[in-house]
Length: 393
Image (cartoon, rainbow, N blue to C red; front, side, top):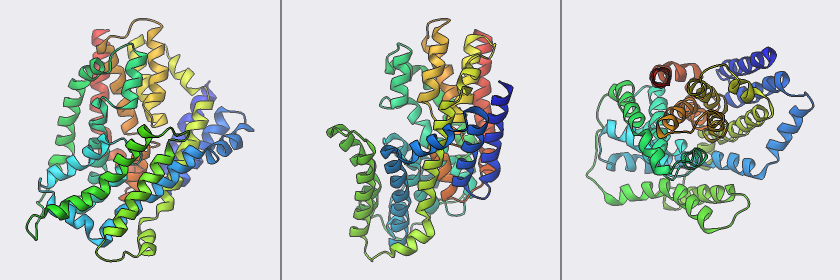
């Protein structure tokens, strides 16, 4: 047991250290270290092979490589300038609202769609602050989104309606919204200088490019019976990329865009993340966490945060933690909220969370700087949640 815990902690340390040089490599190295300590050695190459030959993962990874090319093409062609110049909601509003809008659209890798908007609209704003805003506000509204698969499934496990679950999360949402403003948005300085008069056409064209991918992804997944859902995702992002090229006023230099955006890094990040996740699932770490001798609610809050942080997922920890609590008592809306909150914010700050990985890669920010700016508001929410369980349970 101690050996397993040690391996888990070491693997996270390896990710943080190696990520200073290369994030995709860090995820693969962390996965290998975790595997050496927690599963039979012969199983490690099998988990890697399984990940690299899974069509859904490969297609998702390829799609993540196309998304930064969309942003790069829009920047080179001036479409991103048009969007920022005509989305007249002020710099602070632009910084907070653009990731929030993208977060509500059910699109893997949506953080890469809002990142170029923050980059352009937030000229002069520190890169680590852009990363924090993109990550925090993208996920904040997802937390109470009634079409979120994680929220729907978690509510189902807890025998609650999704709207009861949603209402129970509103106090946390409001608190996190305030923290997001105090720690992040309030620090945004300056205004956007508009060099031309408002143009609806120049607003709608780039906005259409950005929105077509998540909307088409959603429609295709609903309209077609696909054995591999990621087929819809790759078709959607390729359509958006093609649309960006077609409507561009000048022919973009694709090679130059690729050289600048490094799309292969984003593809490798997704592959490394899933290798880590599959090895984690094959280990008994989740069982060890669930066996920690604490009161049920307190255990679930602590374990939920750890699992959210370790897996970069919400649904996986929820599928473990809520059944653990159900062995001792029924799940009330209040209990649901404190557990879901702990899982969710462990996920928001996770080093193996895709949005975190691709955003820090995009803005060229170290994992250390990301944690430095994100840790305090996250700890405040986690501590408030933990104290709530200690006081009321």
